[in-house]
Image (cartoon, rainbow over all chains, first blue to last red):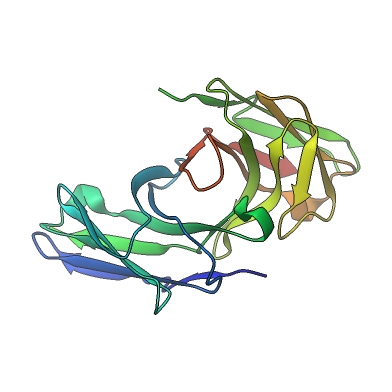
Length: 112
Length: 112
């Protein structure tokens, strides 16, 4: 069974700080990685995706991928209370890479 | 915008009933997924489909079956509902393998 692992948290950061969320994956063949945000009682919504090694920036969010270490991270700069949510890491794996597997999520709290 | 619509937001069923959860997407996506989400366990993949009439077991298929007779519709069937199937059920779709998935609003199923 291919796995995606996340630290469940909770992770607490003060407003304005950088939040760092981490994810590891077991399928070395995985090629695409996704970060979703899920507010309580709502469905997950996509924040970012990354396919290549290195960093990808979008506004206050930066995704980092290291395929050699099988490690994906999400940095949130200038964290806001509205960023408080559960963050889910996901990747495709398995034969044909059709199976989209999620980590259990990290709960982030941004303290005003 | 991609729209993934689940037939019910809330559902209450009795033990032993056959339950149908319906999901429709309007963007001609190849892949469709059914997950259940439980506190502390994250999103767990039940079944997925990468084409019409094609289906693959996910990580927890026991007690469930699926049907995909048309590309836009993916149905989850609980053959004989049990109390341990009380959960939030989330449907998702993606254009093809390796691309981001979009979620429906979720169905909170209670089996009594």
